[in-house]
Length: 91
Ligand SMILES: Cc1cc2nc3c(=O)[nH]c(=O)nc-3n(C[C@H](O)[C@H](O)[C@H](O)COP(=O)(O)OP(=O)(O)OC[C@H]3O[C@@H](n4cnc5c(N)ncnc54)[C@H](O)[C@@H]3O)c2cc1C
Image 1 (cartoon, rainbow, N blue to C red):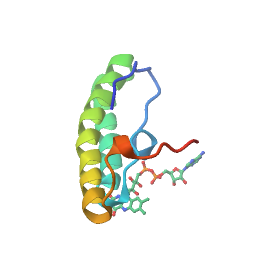
Image 2 (cartoon, rainbow, N blue to C red):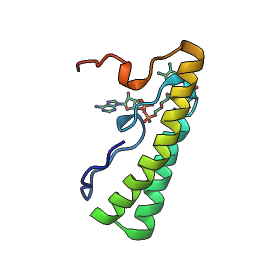
Image 3 (cartoon, rainbow, N blue to C red):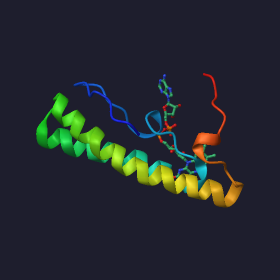
Image 4 (tube, protein in one colour):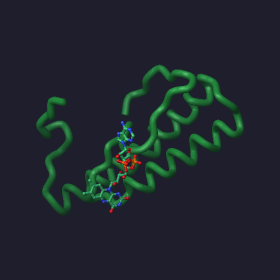
């Protein structure tokens, strides 16, 4: 997940930022971990661009690991294609 410019007062948790596949079995815990990390950082540092950026930095790292778990499960169970070969869905 590429970094972006953080904004004070706005951030995302869970599937809203990293949609999780069903087969990794880690989507719910990842969303809860995001919320716990965000609460801990805001509780310690208060609201600021820096505290939101610190949360988003840790979220990108932990989500990346669990997205790979979901991908590994999809490959094993459904023979899922690598991400770069999946068709793009227009929203
Ligand atoms: C078929 C399937 C099976 C899965 N199995 C597992 C599993 O076994 N284990 C696991 O860990 N994960 C599993 N996942 C993934 C897991 O469900 C998600 O990663 C997790 O629910 C994400 O939590 P969330 O709170 O970010 O989002 P969500 O659970 O999607 O919650 C978002 C909530 O926001 C509400 N909402 C949306 N728009 C608005 C609005 N405008 N106003 C107010 N409310 C709104 C929605 O109704 C919803 O209640 C599975 C996913 C799928 C699709």
